[in-house]
Amino acid sequence: MKVCGIICEFNPLHNGHQYLLDRVRQEGGADAVVCVMSGDFVQRGYPALQDKHQRAKAAVLCGADLVLELPVYYAVNGASEFARGGVRILHGLGCIDMLAFGMESQNAAALQQLADLLSQKQPEFEQALKEPLSRGLSYPTALSAAGRTLGIPIPSSPNDILALEYIRSSMKEGAEWSYFGVERKGAGHNEDTPVNGFASASYLRNGLKNGRLPDAALTALMPPASLTILKESPLFDQPCEDRYYQILRSLLLSEDPARLALALEMGEGLEHRFKAALQTCDSLDGLIHAVKTKRYTYGRISRILAQLALGLKKETYRKAVCEKQTYAKVLAFNETGAGLLAACKKEGTLPIVSNVNKVPEDVPYKALLDSDCRASDLYSVLTDRPIGPHSDRSRIPVLMKNSRGGR
Image (cartoon, rainbow, N blue to C red; front, top):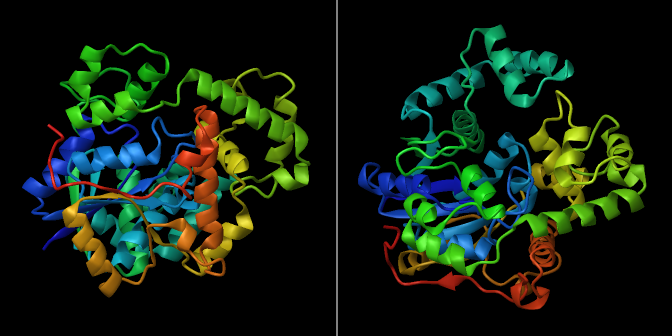
């Protein structure tokens, strides 16, 4: 059996994601698909449009066989750390033969050659990267600048940068799987106009948040199974965002700057900028714009706020990375996925977590797991639903029959 791994968010799962899932089977030859998906908070630093269980259920209906949660310490982090977390989980399963991802082109081999070259020039590359970062450039811009310094063409599109990070992380972990790039179709990253039935996830999120997308538009842009689940789900809409801002506002006002400085990506006195900005801002978007700089982009400021809300600390993450702490937390699976889980328990190196209540208190990864639980509970508060029934401590993975209901 050929097993394909995908690191994803599916926020929400749209036609472009369905295309990726279809291609890995039809062209990549995958017999089974394992997705490592961010949970209730995503890489851009916002709560997800739908909760992780609903998105995982949609993924299985649209072609995945097993969906695992990317721990929030990795999910709400920069591209390289997001990639590190997903790759470590897939590699630890011991059953992945191929890693697939979306790209602006379909030339995964070219990115693999680039990753090999960067690995050979690792000391020079790290040094070349420091200079533009010290000038306050964002990581993607600094990455391109470092590449120019060394005469190495670094891709500029978000999808290709993330794909490159997946390959670099795979090499560092010693993963020997193959790579399968799927060319992005239709609308590009963050584009605000659909193209030929394909729309960016941001277009869908913004339209849904503000109630601007009619059913006909959603039907054209999302697989039926994903759309059905979307309509059943409480969504992170504008009232939820307003509630989130009030929670962040209270936290920033009440916490001492020294405690704020402990947040995962907080640095260079940014905690004082947050404190000052609160005096004039009246929305989450306004706060982020008031604090962001050339180096600290909108996305990074958004992530730092999520890290503050979730209590994600530098020292906890440093320890987790050093000790390679992670686990395979199951969200949803089908009958094929059940077979994969049985194989992973025999061949893999990761603990499989299906019930957080059965995890001993003294396991090394307990702090990471507790953070996932906090994220789930906070998501319930933000979407104004009771915590108990939706807590990680109450919910169990969804087992579904084998199906391909995406289209």
